[in-house]
Length: 95
Length: 424
Image (tube, rainbow over all chains, first blue to last red; front, side):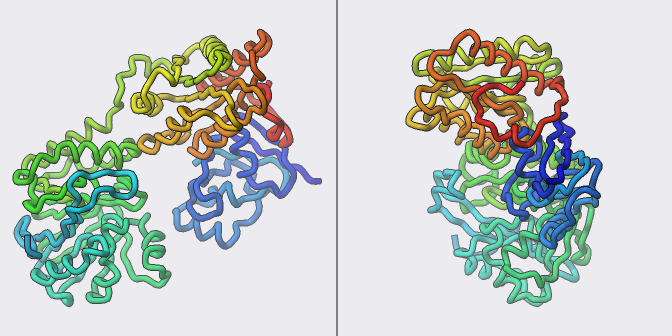
């Protein structure tokens, strides 16, 4: 199975995960500072910044895109409860 | 008091409602004499603004007062400083009666408005700090003050009268038909209580909001609940500034992170673990560690401590498959403070099953704390080796607090192991 390396910049931990993993599945367990509210792509509490590796993330769904736009997110922001990693190296941080 | 509008400044009227029977507001707040839902009407030379409305049950009173100071076809602007239902209950009917009026809401209120009115097809003007709308000879200026106390909240300033429509800021649940702060009964307790329960979790946002408000000339503050502040309005702004300062003096704040460890222990096992966690944390420079037995204190001062702490750790035995009640009591009392992004952790001794630690960790994550170090569980009496693991656990927590934690690479499967021992 393809793997990806996700680095949580705020705590200095890199986690090797199977492709298709959502950030929500690992960020809390590893203790990163990304926090969650509704956990279903509505509240934008888990908005995070992709420091590098956006090309290794899934495309925004219609739902995620709408919520990010409503919250005036930049192109570097994603919702950790929605975004999936596809492979390669990805660096994220809260915010 | 009959349903008459009350003049609060030239061509500015209170058109709100009194609710003297209310005793519990929004589940979390008590009030010993009800509240008011303050709405206002501002007349200009070419337009009329309605600022906020009232709770739905009081819509008739609101419209009766409004109709005495303006015709519906004169209304050009509706300002919503805050979309919570106690201020927007009469909005749908007001929009029906004055369809030409343009809604002015904060940028963050847009999604809430759609949710409130259950419609995506709405005409409104989103406004930010410094944006204005003219009523002809009178200008409303908007101040974006998010999280006072919802994401959408804003204040609106009537330039020519130096009058601030402050929304819930500077408000309180106190009902007195005499309306003005120099005429009503003693509402100081209500003012403080309201701040402590509504604004306190957002004190950083309070400080930002005050940065916008303090430079304004202020002849009068017209909040959305409680007395209208016309006597010494600036003193209430100053009081907010005091209240938004750290509650506890922290002489070590500049040079140390604070880690507070709360524990409760049936046979002394969790207590011994707590002491070892403390000893480990104290090995790291720049961390001020404190240890508290929950059985020796009240919830409220512990909440104050947690508000000021950088990291909080809970030690609990497992009794009948659960952490013990004093821990849950404290963990269910934190809605009045901001704990998001603090460091959290748990540990404990157990006899049979030991669920308490992971249950506490889940609760801490749910409260938006980060939980970077898996908790330590010990079956019954801790051995020296197990106490060493507690010391390592404490040291790791302190390293995370001070940014000295080692960078590491792990496989996802390691995150889902049983939380028996501290991670290496």
